[in-house]
Image (cartoon, rainbow, N blue to C red; front, side, top):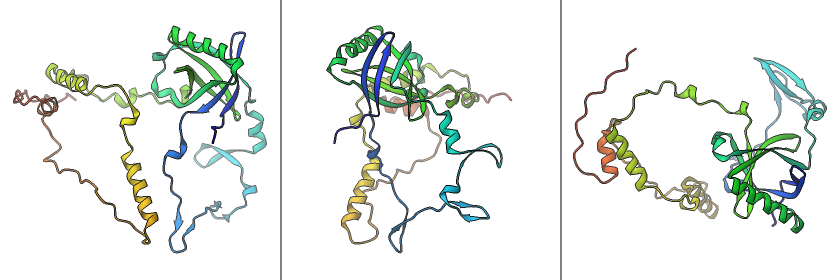
Length: 277
């Protein structure tokens, strides 16, 4: 079945408009999702809308509420929410160009493929793609779709373009608060060299196909086995138990040397000084 376009419209660069189609680059069906089932009857569980102290309520009695303080809500009906929705525009205007390295990976949300809508759009599309590639820049704009407005970044991707939705600044937590208690002490040079050697030895071009969702694969195997069996439960086979270790405290130098194939005994290190209060 042909993929359905997420958005159709025009990318505008100054006075140039390029008709394009945008398609999701990810598949939601790849993950296994479960439903809750009433075991005695085998029927799927449904959920009633219930108000505390009142019981089940009709769907047409429900409106949306935004909690402004504990237990206090601003109530909004569908008409009020509809009134402030952004009008869906069929034009994505490129308003800024930045170096790709300037955008922190924390801001990237979801990828989409961008393709020219027809042969007439191809020339301008290829010019934009190759100009971005030559300049080593990423284009920024805001895409209005389904009543909301998304910040997006566009960059070359093979023969096409890749559009990625970005989080807005108020959707990203600043990480420094989580790192404040990390000691500023620099690691010993020998430890750092060993770690760098280990990284170098295990460096290779990225290939997502080299990695497998082992839990997902085992879950599919279990489901297939269960579907073919008459019993209610199936036995999970070939589950490797983790090896028992001696303790949580390890010799970092010895572990790193062993990792890179160095069997020489580690040098004794001075005891670590306690941090002053």
